[in-house]
Length: 77
Image (cartoon, rainbow, N blue to C red; front, top):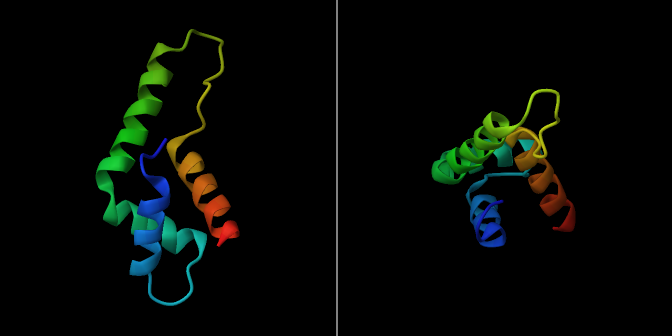
């Protein structure tokens, strides 16, 4: 979960030159907000460590999660 996601996505979009696609948006987000990316990875690793053997992880991988959020946000634009 990214705090103030709408504001941060708008900021990233303004920094991208040319047409924004999912990959360029993802890369620019990682450059612009490394702390948020780090927090997503930390949250995922906490869940992964706390899971019991044979159970599934309730969170998607951080890359998948962020790409899904970006894809949905770009479709709204």
